[in-house]
Image (cartoon, rainbow, N blue to C red; front, side, top):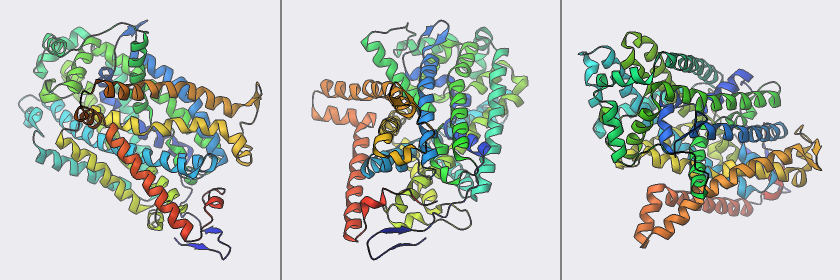
Length: 554
């Protein structure tokens, strides 16, 4: 597409080239596909990424998911309100650049892109795991068959690279579909995955811890063996702890929940393609997906955890995240596989669950590539990056170049696992980089009535309570939740890392291991790019200030 300038230096732009093909149903399943990912068969694996205990029969993870869900309702309302006023593709970048400043809009979206790319890499890793776990499942169902050797698959980098390439090709095939076809495929595959969730959830009631323990020898392990190995490695089930250190640990657990939730609001990033009533569609998609996210990380997770064995799944998950001694050559407690060991005759049902998990692993990546491409398109329309990135392909009605780049860069994070970058480190790094994405919407909600009253009047949340508009209250409530979480889960560990580092090399090792160092590098690179592009635009005579007073084109 072409951009031009008038003689009085006003910035003149043509239409974006996007088409409004996304229905309310499409938007809902786009959001669901953006966050479920690993959770179908991996739900209980995430117990062990934080301090685990039960209160009133509910796991600490589920409690934190419920708390996060309540807080995220206000975040969802913020996204619905801001999208109503600014129904353009680009999400946070458009909101923050028009309400606060183009610099913060750029930095927020730049770090989100970095975080999202790590998540694509994460899902490719998990998809490779799930291909192997599905093979192991079939080996349990059919002893002595070809699949009996599945625990030994992908033990070298070459075989991992081959299956990773196959997964990437599947991701690329979906990503390169025409926009309308893409959303139909996402909706259809997401519905299949939701069916898998239902089978998994109700199927768990046919299993109890004693039957699970009795079936473990079919997987080449035992309950006592798993518990003993995990205990020796430092695992234990704790009790509710609301001391300072206990709250710090719970904040870390909330950060893991946020990793599981991120994506429920992503229909806001494709608002420029939503047809009909944008406000109603985005609200329905965001809140509907949030309800499903809470279900997957609380009731669903605890039903599976309790029926398969709370201690067993915790201990096995601990071995997976923290050691190389997890059963089945280092595999996580994949619930469809565990269910097959208990009820091998019902293997077709558990296979559907396993395939549903693989489907969502693969599907999340093109969904991320699509939403990332809309952020980059919005950058290009504002000349934050070269115009080359804003080319919308006529066949797909999408920024095809950016989609391809996003898939390839996501694969880089998969390749890094060949060099001992762990999934746990990837999780921490991804949530750390997404910090501004979680925090800035609250600031936008609070400042919008005062900085952009013209846009605020379009939000449908101008009614007041105690002298402040509803939108401002949404922002205040959200910030009261999210800022302490980030301070405790990320700032405090950095302070401790600095205090515990006896030498500079110790701190460098700490920062590289946790991803803090790389997060800082990505932010510095982003800041450099912003000021370089600002200087170029100013030199070319573009009225930068006026450019960010207007919304990007449809």
